[in-house]
Image (cartoon, rainbow, N blue to C red; front, side, top):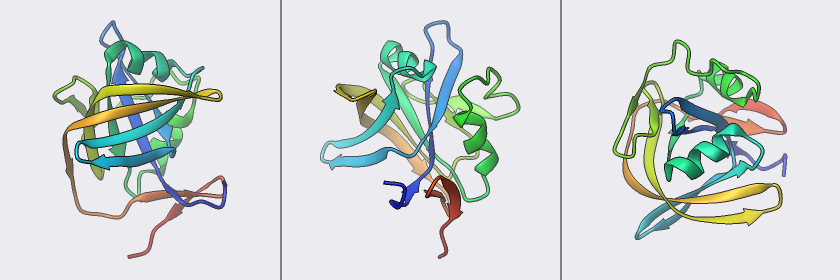
Length: 148
């Protein structure tokens, strides 16, 4: 699967105490247009997994080609200050939306399915927007750029 090119996103949620949590994900897909559904696959041992379950919501923040530093920051499992210096806001569900993301989707948790050591979270898209720019990609364990 390392030969499969994927986009890179930060999946974010709010913990019960209100603090933001999030992780870098490439296992993200559009599931349905009517109703609008997306899926994200999250390792059960991650702290963000519990945040999504507790909040019943998550946001997908699609990263731009120049945001590899953000992707690396949110990929670090042991980093407590992932949001330090990063502007974000809460949308309809309260999930953190990164201000500088290329695009974002705010999702209500619709269903969950177990898959190996991950949970497949299916979210109904309640709101979203996109901006200008090119996306960050992931290919063969490295970040890549997409040419127009």
